[in-house]
Image (cartoon, rainbow, N blue to C red; front, side, top):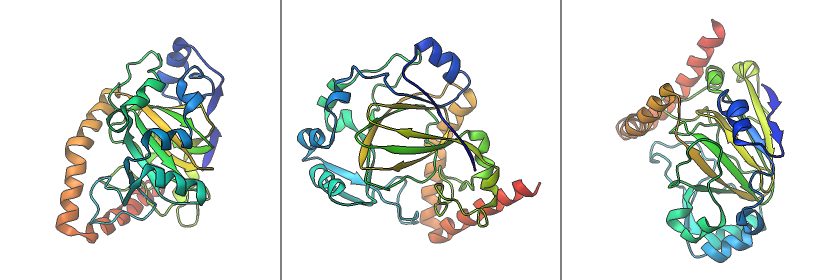
Amino acid sequence: MKLQPVDTVDTLTREEFKKNYFKPQKPVVIKHFVDDWEAVKKWDFDYMKQVAGDKIVPLYDNRPVDYRDGFNEPHATMKMSEYIDLLQKEPTKYRIFLWNILKEVPELQNDFNYPDFGIRLMKGLPMLFFGGKDSYTFMHYDIDLANIFHFHFQGKKQTILFHPNQTKYLYKIPHSLITREDIDFVNPDYKKWPALKKAKGFIANLEHGNVLYMPEGYWHYMRYITPGFSMSLRAIARNPKNLSKAVYNVFVMRHYDNLMRRIRGQAWIDWKNEKAIKNTQKVIAD
């Protein structure tokens, strides 16, 4: 893989953002765009325990997809206070994924606002993500192909990104949003996954208060260097092709995948994994 650093700036105007990053669909890390947020001053593990300690949260780990699992079905649940204690005590693969703070802890919305990036943000879907040291997400893109603004809090996090035009090299699983789950994107085995040598992407390191802009449909792999958490705000896809694909993903693809899991069981998962290899090998053979 050929990874270049994501552009990193201290701050920028809405005009600079739209011209240099939104219109060309290029990622950027902004270090001090939301320094005035109460969240930047207050949000850490202790504060989350204080305001959400009794909430039951969904947890995910890095186990391979199983045909018995529903689409984005959690692997475990735990009280937020217990989960944060676990994060601070020892490394854990358990992560919180897509936790809607407006629904679960409405008072947290008083700690942030919706920044003016020059595009309309969806105000009903601020999501939180938590992870322990060395936990990670599989390489994936979001089901709605949204423009994503990812705000990081507490600790350090690393992200690897690929433009959608690199999909052909990434061993994408058919009828899903992920690549092969057995690929280590931090230290890829090029003998096993030779197409990755052709993939060109970006790498970014995030710290407390930073915001990462991920353009529409970008593949992203997130790894927690230290325990921490992030919040994502999103804006609907503007490209008509991406918008139609998002509608297909939400209303057709995920339901078809769940149906096939029920009908074919593990054979469906195994077929998809093999198909990912065959599709990618065909591309690099051409």
